[in-house]
Image (cartoon, rainbow, N blue to C red):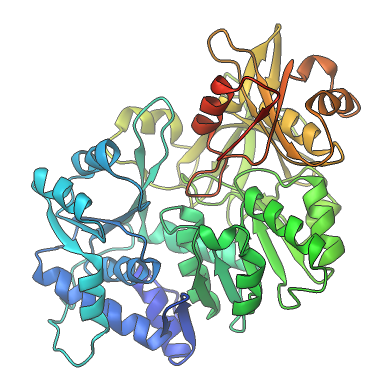
Length: 509
C-alpha cells in the first residue's frame, strides 16, 4: 500500500509516477506533462540552491507567469524553504512591507521595478522567465538539489499574505502537513478526476487558485492556468476551447458565466462542476446556470486562509439545504460560540469556530494575534476563531450570516451586509449586489447591478424578502461591481465610486 505524501513536492512526484505523459499544466502559450513539470521543479530547485536558498529560507514570487510560478512553488518545497506567492500587481509600499516582514533571501519576479525594490532592501532578485527557461531546457546541465534538506512534515512551506483593510497584510503560516491534509480533505469532497480539465482564472496568489495545483495533482487532472481577462467576456470561448470540465469560481465569475450561457444555451457540454467560495451565489445565478447547463453540478464552500477550507456542500446540496455553505471536511469539526466563548447549541447564531489538522500554524511573527485567533483547544489541535458569524443545524450543516467586518449597526439595529445582499439578489433583474456598511457620516449604501430595474424599485421589492429597517436608505445602480485580482468585490474602489457619485448610477470603469 502506497503511503501518503509527507512533503508538498511529493504530491507532484506521485502524480508524475502515475501518469508521466498526462498534461499537468497548460496556458494559451504552453503546456507541461506531469513528468516535465516534476523534472523542471527539480532543476529549478538546483538553481535556487546554487543561488543560496537553504532550508527555512523565504522565497517571494510575484509574477504574471502562472506556469513558472507553479514550477517555483514545488522547487522551493524540495529545498525545505518557504514560498510566498504575491499578486503581480503588489508593488511599492505593499511589496516593501512583505520584504521587511518575512525577510526573504530571494525575490523572483518578471518586473524590473520589483527588482529595484528588492535590491533597495538588500534582497537578491532573479527574473522568473530566466529561471524557468533554464529549468525547462533539459539540454543544459543543472546542479542537483540537496538530497535530504532535513525537512519535516511540521515545517513551514508557505506564507500566504491576507489582504489588509485598516492594517497591513499579515501572513498565514502553512506547514507541509497542514497543506496536504487540507488538499486531501477538499479532494475527498470534490473528486477531481484524471480526465478533468480544471479551468482556473484565479491567480495563484489567491489560496483558492494555489490549491488548484494540489487538487489537480491529487486527481491527475489537467490544470489550465487562465487569466483575469479570460474570466471576463471571453470566458465562454475559453471554457469551450479548453474543453473545461471544472471551473473554480467566485460570485463575479459565476455571474458572468450565467449571463453568457443565457445567450448561448447550447454551449459547454463538457462542464460538469462549478465550485464557489468568497461569497454566496445568488439564486438567480444558480437558476440560470442549472437551466442552461443541466449537466452542471454546483458545490458551494466556506473557508478562510487560516484553515484553507472548513465546509463543502455535496453536489447540488444547496437544493436540499438552502442557505447552507456546507458540511465540515472529513476529520474536522465546526461549532459556534457566544461572546464569552461558550459553545452554543444547534440553531443559535454565534462566532464560527473551526477545529482540525487543517487549521494553519498561525500568523508569521504575530504572537498576540495568534493568541486571539488560534487558542489551544481540547485535544491535539488548536482551534480557529474565525471572526465570522453563523449557526449550525441539527445535521451539522453550516449557515454563514456575516463576517465580523460585515456586521454593522444602523438606526439602533445590528445588521448583516450579507443578509442585505442576499435579499437584493432575490429581486428579479438584479444580477449582483454589494453593501458598504456605514462609515463616518455616511450611512450604509447598497449598490446593485441589473437590467430593467431601478434603484428605488430594488429597495421596494426587497421588502418582500427582508425587514424594512435592514434595507439601506441609499441604493445606487452600477454597470458592474469593481473587483480585485481574486475576483472578489473591491470595497475600497466601490467606496471611492460612491463618494464621487452625483446620480443614482455609478460606473465601475
